[in-house]
Length: 428
Image 1 (tube, rainbow, N blue to C red):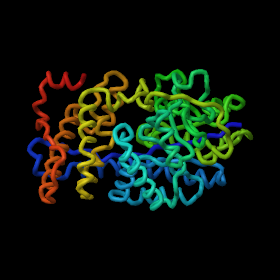
Image 2 (image 1 turned 135 degrees about the horizontal axis):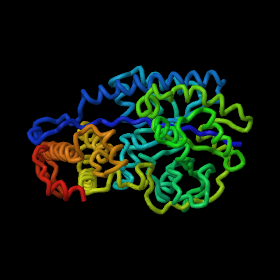
Image 3 (image 1 turned 135 degrees about the vertical axis):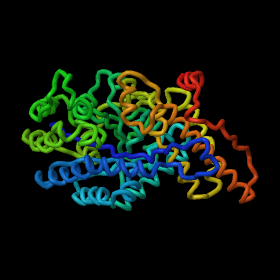
Image 4 (image 1 turned 90 degrees about the vertical axis):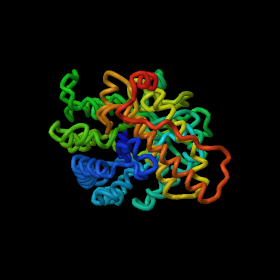
């Protein structure tokens, strides 16, 4: 038998506005309210609302045999509630079917595991409370930001009580193994299972569906189901992990992506050995077939599947490091507004926008970026961080807090005057 496990990532960051040098010390609003609202409305109308309705219809039509899982970042839920409540209500309707599982992740879609285990744990707890509040669900499975994974992470998450964790089923990691089984992460106590993404079949939908240069285009339901059926006898679980915005946003409606999904479940279920499962159900059905060793940091991004999408150049490395260096000072102030501003700056997208890769990966980064260049993304981020430091110092002075160490302001940056020499150095 083969059980299909659909997992969709739903995320929208609070994008930083064009925060210029003259705003430092004057303007404490770092995020682009207008753009964030516009993007939420655009993606809601193209993806969230029509796709949620389609999934609800498919669950009903297939009498509960069709099931999916979602991981929705806390900052995405915040924006749904703020800019388009109807979207959040449509996810609540899906939750009520009992055929949808919600996964746990960091509230702010951050890379905090790399810098602060305390902050990482706090963001997970904040996210759990939000999922409980809106969907009345307590997550049992964890999915880290951008599928960043390593043995050490699995052990940490196991100690938090989670029963499963997700990772990219990358060839260099799996070796001779198939992604179509559950595994036990190395150096864990045996209480957590590892789900590995079948990136080939996932990416056929997420990236190649509308690519007319692809040798296997067009991707029809019959063709895809033949590939799914071929796993019978060669695997137990097919993990199809992708961005939810695949439907209607990355692959537009006129590509036929919605019709593809409309007829896919019924066709898969025509094979008597096929089924759909949520991740938690999979844990009840399938054993862990082997131990899997992932000693390095793995992600699902770009051709390298490493962290270079977020930490590949000096702009990304320095901005993320300097931001996390002020964590303890921000928290010491116990100021909710400052803490929320700081945490919104931990969102991984800000560093993704600073990426300076070329060729196909670079094109993907440009597609998602809200800025004219990676240098602009860096300038606006660092200027906002400078202002946050000024606000922190003012708060410390007002409270009479004696500094254990001084906070240093960074060189104010003018987006119109980033020299070529400086740009080259930051790109290295």
